[in-house]
Length: 326
Ligand code: TXA
Ligand code: MG
Image 1 (cartoon, rainbow, N blue to C red):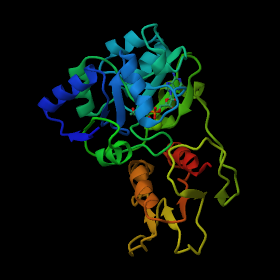
Image 2: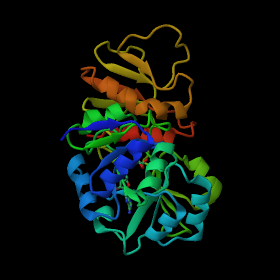
Image 3: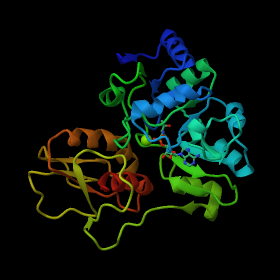
């Protein structure tokens, strides 16, 4: 199969809506990361996602909607979920709610809940509006590898396995959506930290928000890997640090969060995630930098964790710990 990249012209949007309606896959840009989309009302189309990504069928998919009306058709809503959608949609928040019978088991992996998100990327929104059905889409990477934040990333991972990629530029946020289990409106559970920070969620949810946050052992320079399921991973092995040692080996790669004195040029085996010391910037650059360093032929990638005072620390350090897990 030849994989083509389509510019987001009105003609191409119609063409790709037709590709989806006939049951084929299209990789789509979102504000978080690129997704691999199928018509959520077509079971055999959704099955193709698992084959293309080599994804286990027990791992459920997020359904993307254009309107609240579509979202209401998929799940049983409660008052808290309405408030959250009001505040954060369209945007990087995924809500897990009790599913309605019409949602296929292929999407939910047999669960009685469904994950729903209304994306804000204008190109993806145009496609959703044109195709008129909700689109199931996981991140558009081979299972276990890092999520793509550009069409070139998608092509490098899925070339020959999907017919089409819709061009939408670099993903503005650069990490996946926040996933919130809101089946019980009174006790929401954060399933994955992401593009909406827990600080922002708390403004709506207060202290009712329960975190499933992983704890980094205090007082250890290098964090022992293996605490979390390996995911979002480079091929090179990753070691995490709160702060780097004074001597940095020239053979290995070193990714700083921030360098106070970064005016002088760094050696090629070193780079900085957030030149402006902002977690938001680190999130935006994380997967691109990891991909570039991963193909640099280093025996090890060393990465500095984001200081916990930064609102994005949960989101980024979660991805870093998964990347380091073996
Ligand atoms: O930003 C994002 O969320 C991107 C873009 C494309 O929207 N999508 C994404 O999808 O990251 P994926 O499949 O890579 O991650 C979705 C996660 C999976 O880990 C899956 O287990 C979880 O969502 N999930 C899906 N349905 C669920 C459900 N009913 N209950 C709990 N978790 C669910
Ligand atoms: Mg994924």
